[in-house]
Amino acid sequence: MKRHLISAADLTREDALLVLDTAEELEKVAGRSIKKLPTLRGRTVVNLFFEDSTRTRISFEAAAKRLSADVINFSAKGSSVSKGESLKDTALTLEAMGADGVVVRHGASGAPHRLAGWVQGSVVNAGDGTHEHPTQALLDAFTMRKRLGDLEGRRVTIVGDVLHSRVARSNVLLLGTLGADVTVVAPPTLLPVAINTWPCQVSYDLDAVLPKSDVIMMLRVQQERMNAAYFPTVREYSRRYGLDGERMAALPEHAIVMHPGPMNRGVEIAAEVADSVRSTIVEQVANGVSARMAVLYLLLGGSEPAIGTEVTE
Amino acid sequence: MVNAASRPDEPAAARVADGDPRPKAVLEGPDIRRALTRIAHEILERTKGGHDVLLLGIQTRGVTLAERLAGLLGDVEGRPVPWGSLDVTMYRDDLRMRPARALGRTEVPQDGVDDRVVVLVDDVLFSGRTVRAALDALNDLGRPRAVQLAVLVDRGHRQLPIRADYVGKNLPTSMRETVRVLLGENDGRDAVLLGPAGGDR
Image (tube, each protein chain N blue to C red):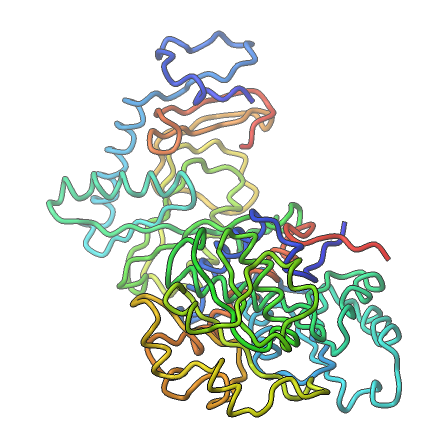
């Protein structure tokens, strides 16, 4: 039985807690002089990146290497993909190399799901189009739990370009599973049509939600995915939906500020907020390695995966 | 297997006749206490006062035993003896034979293991594979001056060249039998149960 991590919804509450608990243990490896475990010796993990990425690719690579897996990095640029090779042919090539795990990022929503039907190994979605990015949601939940404790009943506000954000969708789904109260805040033009089917509340007024938030997660305005005018000017967006020092002061004392990166400083988040003690942005990157180690261990470490879902072609 | 922990009120007289399929208690609470006290004294003797000793219990019952031993050593020497826990899951050689398991806690005192005499503590010594995994795990944590092994029960059938330095009880068993250690902190009562095949040891 092959199981994959394609969507945050693939994780039951038990699965999600298992990943978070495992990540908590694996985090200690980062503090040792020998930052390595022999667990995935002899297993091969392929990082298949059709879209640009810095932190996610490096994070997955570090995670796999700390577990002693062999890592093959593949980016579309400079590969046969630029000669017109299809996703399926690329997948079959990787298959022939004997990949036990395939970490895939693709510009098309649903690509990892298709891939899961073609390869023998477990597929981990590292971001597909505007669909999902489950390991980001896991590392965010891990960061929240470390700062605030149990997530049950915690109020999480996700602000910004929800329409183009795979991070938002995965976070809403996972946080729902973990029992948090999620509110998304965005201009109506940057909310998906089906937002009413998401397990969260919707608001258009950031200032009203701020004092009732334990966590505020700012999303990047994804200019590269915007093929229309979603708001009049960047300045107006920033004034209404950006997090500046004044707005941060309206948050409760214990609240934390998160951002999945990369940031547009001065657009959705002011530099003084990004660099404040409440910001967990750098922590999130470090936690990303632990969370991804946990996912890789639970998917590839045993005789069969302990988390995730099956995919039938 | 029939788990005696589910009926903790049963008196010591629950020892049952041979041939009975139920597990029988080969050690009871007082026997375990005496065995641990003896091990504590042996550790002090062998390490000449136990100055650099660090007890590391192997998850899960080894940790309980390490804590108890640390208490006993502390009582005798009049100073606290450091102890911690070691989870060897990631170092096991049978990882690929079962689905990935949840990890236990590894907690090593602040000073680390470098230049200490580390005494690994486990409940049952059987094939020796857990101890091998523990030695590998320890290797990644630092470089102890020496490593010793204390177990409550040695049941034989080693598959690796490993032996214990301190043994609570040597218990000759057949491969088909199961040995299960129950400890008050984990199971509600202290006992070592020897039973027919079917258990997890």
